[in-house]
Image (cartoon, rainbow, N blue to C red):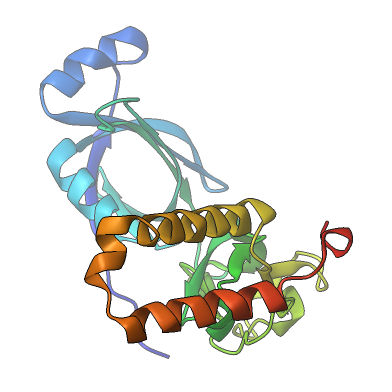
Length: 240
């Protein structure tokens, strides 16, 4: 097993609470809280720039060491609060854990590869589950679960929870028959838009100034293609 990278955030206890924390933010501090089985819920403050940089570089379940008044607490980020518009950090919740503590959490799904059916049939790749419920020891929690879609070649092909390749140290709690990703046929609306675009193209080609610019061979090819499309088109009663 690879040695985990040690990520550290320095913190100090916070006495200021409520609306008064705005003053801390103006001073470049970030209000936070840490709680867990072996530590009571404790308000803390972090350096805003240091915390913002660190949190932007880690995954959803990356373990962080919080250094607090000479003690170290291994922790997970459980929640972040941000400004609505500028998205600046306002507050962070940390859960103190031990490496051998079993954790229940959600893990994002990361789609990798390209599904051949998307390019071959203009199909839609639909992600049914964007995150998965998992249980694992804190030291084994993944930041994401990769889903390889390169084998989805036909419309209707899918990947179920049971098809996912995960470490034996991680247990997925979702229904094993739940669909994670599925290849769906193009919607009727998309087909209608394509037909309208083709019709507009033919109308443009029928304009005199355009037809004059085309050679007899090019005109013959256009007429031949139009005839083939009319023959392949199903009768009205078969459409629906």
